[in-house]
Length: 89
Length: 237
Image (cartoon, rainbow over all chains, first blue to last red; front, side, top):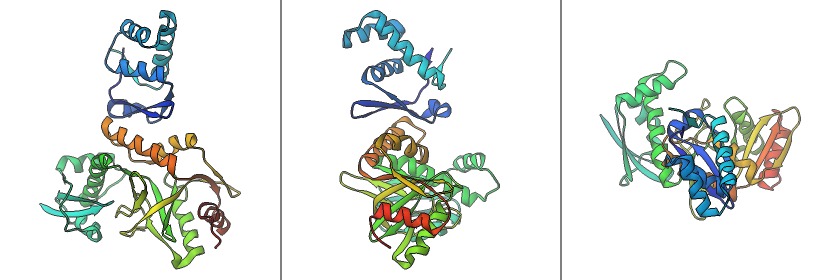
């Protein structure tokens, strides 16, 4: 499982907005609004990190529990999956 | 091969191409200035436009589309955005009407011209360019000007953008910045690469923070134009 190539994140004040270019832009033309943590997760997902690597990074940066981190990652992945931005090998 | 330099949205660009259609189309935009960059059209660019097109078109016309696409991809880095809209100049300021094709942008613009006569003119009827800088947002005419071929090689600071939809009654309201973003995104040219789209997004945000935006639901009577004119310009006819 990985994010499709071409997801762009822009900061707008306190919020972040994801839009899709390249391969990702073929399936998604809208925008997704996110908070800082969600944007952080997406940036790490873009590097192809595994779920456990993301949870470790979240843990380090935001001092959240493993369960909370897992929940945040799953929420983002399911949101991006619902608009066709995730690809499965 | 044909080689010329044109000025679009204040950017001199050299184009190397095959068909004379481009030269005729862009003749008002010729410049002697040194180009910022060069765009070379290839046969495969034209083939790609033919695949995208919804009908039979000449190679010259397809070449002009290929050029505009490549220009917008490259010019995104120069803070230039194509907004699918009709731009009207009145009293030194530009008012833009944005909507999907077939909604009635041209009809509404024609009502403005009926109402204001020679005090107003159309900068571009379909695909103008916006240049965003630290302290101004300026709309520029281009020769890609829609079915009516309304365009002039002119420019003006953008004083308002109005998203148009059809309705029985005429109503207008000011849009909040948050509402505006998806509406702008749906009517701008989106570069295919992530870097270009990132520049366009940054500029959409800047537009949303500095230009008043409106949502107009309207019919095709003069009353509709009076409402949008008074609301956007704050002036009396």
